[in-house]
Length: 584
Image 1 (cartoon, rainbow, N blue to C red):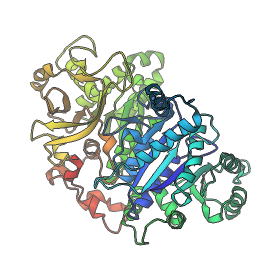
Image 2 (cartoon, rainbow, N blue to C red; image 1 turned 30 degrees about the vertical axis):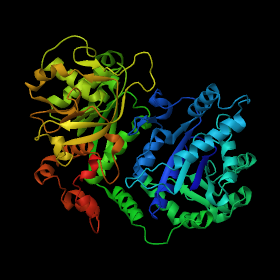
Image 3 (cartoon, one colour; image 1 turned 90 degrees about the horizontal axis):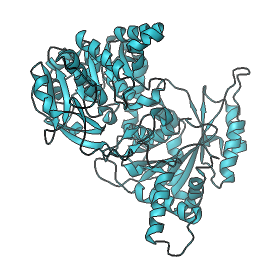
Image 4 (cartoon, helix red, strand yellow; image 1 turned 120 degrees about the vertical axis):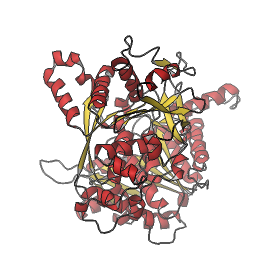
């Protein structure tokens, strides 16, 4: 097993996740099996109870693990399926060591950070690195480990120490360290400054880890003189200084690394079993990034939520929209609307904000109401749903968005009054434990069965009888009220295995009014967009009817905009019919 540790310096949020994913991607394109582990030094057991403003969205895995959004990047870039133990936190490590101590596993010993905590970290990494993550079930050959935070943080010290010991345990030819650092360029002088990187690498080396590659994040490509200066002061060859400057799309990052000889370096440094051959997978990345740069037609989606001030709060949702927009050759414009700004109270307090929010909503081609928690802002979301329903605008409601579509219909069509949430429309689920907040929701991959053959969403899923998608919710639509809605053309076309949970809604006499209880964005991939989002983009671009009439195929003209100047359509996307493996 080969281990690649990615650390970061100077600032957090520097792009370690994208660098780690890109390194994994170029190694996977060489035919290796790659897995990934994210280490978060915070004391929370998992990311489940965070506000999205803390660390961005909470990503949900097949096994119900609520994890850091970087695991979403790994899954999308590497097209793998991870488990909750691929996200390691200080909380998990301390919990496992304390449990062992209580059981008496350490018999009379003083339990300390070194060696007990550091040993537990190393054992966890070695154990998790062996778990297969690809569909073929083969064990990984390379494990990319991302250490969150910045070098020098108090909380990440035990992890740095663990990896200092680890490099000798697994031998030098099986372990290497990539250090991602910032090279700022102050606007006053315009020159690239290397001092932050020098200090960061010095600190890392002082803790016993010497970087093999120094990846420099900068706004413009690094000058040769700057590269040589970093090489001299950071104890690496100039070839080991890699420049990752700002690029038009993150799909270009694997290509940047590949161009600078990262694969060749790993081959001889880690003795990787790779024959140098043309790498088909990287060709796909190049096509995707070229296409995304050439798009001319625009499509705008209004995202009505309550965490809109921080785009990472909806990272997977935005990615799913981007994948779908790319598949129909449109440039995506997301209009973030804080749902509270659509409410009547805002009209009295801040009329300008209110009218701007409504102007954004009314000018969008489609409306998306994503998942969320809590009552704040729900009234504004209901207003947006009501507008989309009456104006026949394409609409997709996810999780809470689907439940609110039910509430809106009950209030404005069935004329039911009373509480918005709570019985009878949206009810608490039997498995929800009100005493504990962490990990008490309906989480992970569950099966949804289509109850009818003429559902739009079923056709978008390639006429599948069922789909397996990831859930994360605490409430559900009351199944006893189904009949009242269906009489008025509001159909529950998808339900769970027992027929007790309402999973998919569709509205008759509407181009695309769909709600799903699950979170389809978590399984969207650049080359395999998620069907509910894909349907929303098709409808918003006015292409849904022709797509369905063609038996769910896109013509090359739809896929490759006539004005894009492309030479040859990528067959995989031109024939974007959702294959059966999407149901896995």
